[in-house]
Length: 219
Image (cartoon, rainbow, N blue to C red; front, side):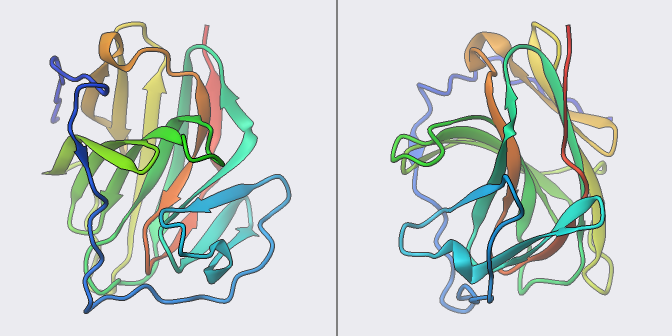
């Protein structure tokens, strides 16, 4: 089991870093989208990208995303106030040109405004995970891309299934788990309140199936 504790983490003190540039050899593919499932909203990373160039649809008990530009998706019903545990299972169904990431975001505030603010926990097909914080147009690195045996790597066909959990039920830290194994703990003393919207994030040029996103309040 890998455990990583960020005892010096401060979201406000972290230097802002620009979004990673998408290489000219991997331009964002436009996908014919449409209306989002009832109750859902979305936002692309770049103002120049259109949400309609990605496809987010209900499928079974979950959702299927074909991107398109990198984007976040959320339902206001998943807003949290107080301790909670959020989890979803994501299956990458096809191999992208190079490893691309997907996962959960939390602490979401002002998501439709220039002052958007949220933290996100992602994995990708090469067996790595990452944690970042976004404030407006700035992205703060919390945990850079890190190898973990807990993350299932994509197979020869580009397929991989990973269950991601954000456990904000304890007062000391927010625990991040992949497939039931804790990979990181973010000290609550630096995060502050974890209230906000929980949703999903899918980077560009991916085809993924997202299981039901469950957000369970805890006493």
